[in-house]
Figure 1 (cartoon, one colour):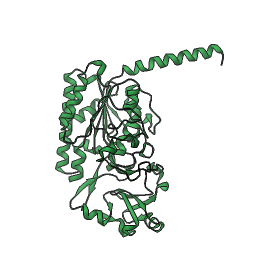
Figure 2 (cartoon, helix red, strand yellow):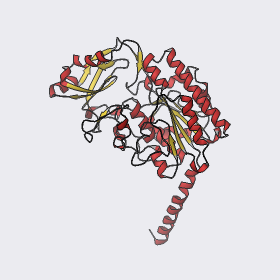
Figure 3 (tube, rainbow, N blue to C red):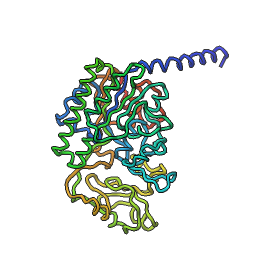
Figure 4 (tube, rainbow, N blue to C red):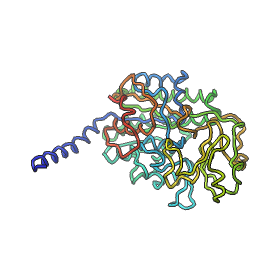
Length: 407
């Protein structure tokens, strides 16, 4: 390379470094909304007219997007904002242990652990990259946002408070848009749990779940009305997603691990449709690994490749996956929390259509009328980063999966 060419390259690089933040700063704000447990086909029930309007005006994946394994809330929410599989970002399930925290259990309800960056630092969520780029961010109950991930917090964040109504959450977000331009967040999140809660309690086809769908749509309608009243409806990109779908459970579809190995020969870390175990003896491991009636267990290093799971140190030695609809547990656990009625659950094979999650996007940078094919949820992250004009961190997503939705 000649000195002249070298100087020209350096000048162009400097120009890019100067221009890139300006271009990012000119991008429309992004509101990322999670409706926990919103199965993709719920949108076809005619109970969510606001969501249907957003889909008509923007991009939609009618058959949904495929969650990552394990199909649970915390792993998939962190995947959506990092673009990493749970096996890579380290939130390997809703319940975890780590040798770096001996005797400490991470769980969704453990406030001290949820706020500890130790568990979250394996990935860099959107808000961290945005804050480092000089953008203000604000999060409303997104898993990971309560910790100073890699030393950075959103400008505005709140500890999870289920009692805060959906309307109040929307009103707080709209309040962020009323701030002076210099203080206004460029990336915001909202989270609604009612669909998942009612789905677990009563099942995916219950009147209670259908009411939750209508209620969350009313919250979206309040958001849309608030954006229109402020004259910014066409100046904000909305991305509405879910972490997973849901399928029916039944008291008649329960299988017990202690029918395979003695109850005192293993420790259960998680149980359900995805079950993780620590065997106490080689004999217990040998008995557990393999195909059983209605479920199968693998050693963590021998998981099917399509599940993209099994290398992270936090993953227990044995992982079991049941047939959809069948719950794996132990008799002791079932005695403590017996299944006595039909309900719903997730955690099944991510390739099962019932696990597919919602994806709808609408805004000035999103093409109207686009219908996306089924894609993996790791690709939401590069989509959001493109909307913000930010360079993504290394991730497992495929930008081509959502590229048709971008103007």
